[in-house]
Image (cartoon, rainbow, N blue to C red):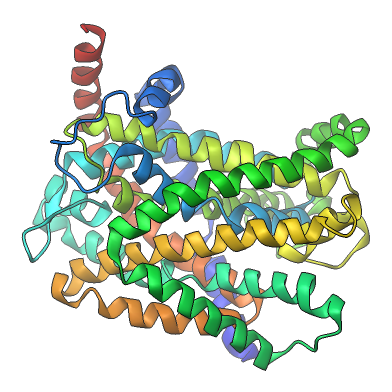
Length: 457
């Protein structure tokens, strides 16, 4: 088992090297410049779209803008914001959050382009149904000669869409918050039992398809975000006097290489700190990875740019808001300096230190909703990948693999699970970013047409 974990760790580290950082961040900056910072100039219009101002029930697609964003957010607003941020602070200190922010700002531009393309170049599956996603905009937008990139994305997506990290961290939270304080022995058997419960809950929803998934998460996501916001704002308010100090440290420690506790990467410890922040940012908001294109590509719209504008709100909500609140709630308590806890256990310790008796239970309630909603969305992504590779009639088989993986996630270590998903996310990012950069000029042609039409109204 140790050898397997070391192999997975080496694979993730190799994938997250300098070439991928240049592709994600350098490519994202290029897209922002090409668009003349369009994502930031039309935030108001994006919010109008999200509110349903321009919805047309006769447009092609399966779900509306709000449901598409909720489905995409349900897979990103979750353990990446809670456990992922805690991992970043444990390994890199407050400065890691600066690089996480950078990935989100750049990611807003990337999301606009990738999800506009997901609607511009929708394809059809083997049953003739309209489908969206990276694999389809590669094949339709770039042509059959580029299909190998679509295949790479879909193959990596079969693993990248597995819920192992979310399940692992929810299991850890249940053990840390609920079972261990009540003197209930934890181990493989209790983890397996927790995994079986998750399997039952997930099976009921995912076997109902996208409509049931989108309706469930569009109600669950706003509620879970609101409860989490109230909890972390309470922690920040209680420790308000030290908030300015730690907020400043996010900037001042961004180049403090000595705080980095992971393996040195390019540029030594500073390079490791930068990659850590960007890697955790990509895990949190998935900008440039491409999973969200499969949800947004199913949106009911005849205007591709509209979906791109809605999708770009994802990194702002997910990383700039939710991750920042999580980071501050951990930092202001000072608990990150005095405990060996990592992942969700560190966040739970911060909640308990400020809101005694109920704080960690509030967190458990929030992350249960986060994780379970993520389980629903990622199953949809995996079935889309299998459908592309093998045909729509075989896509339901992915759900069985997916369900088995829940048991694996519940009974395996944090490091193995986070490195596994990181590595395959990197493999998904390569075809996503290459295709997006090639097709970006066509997005701008469509954007100019749309905004001329919009401004004439």
